[in-house]
Image (cartoon, rainbow, N blue to C red):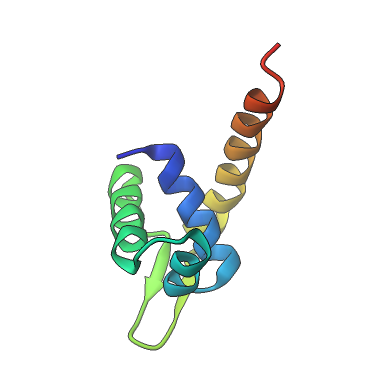
Length: 84
């Protein structure tokens, strides 16, 4: 699993409000988004998203991790922008 990619996908899920909207925004199929989320949750050992047939919402852990992931991705993007 590409952890940075999975974090970015999770952030997009949270921002878009659904996995299908995140998939459309990222230009990937729904299964890619779902697989990355499942692998990220397994790696962390906690559920990040409550899923039902009609909606999804972040768990308490999901809200906490969202901020951590945003910080991590921002730092990585900063390194890419300023390699010195």
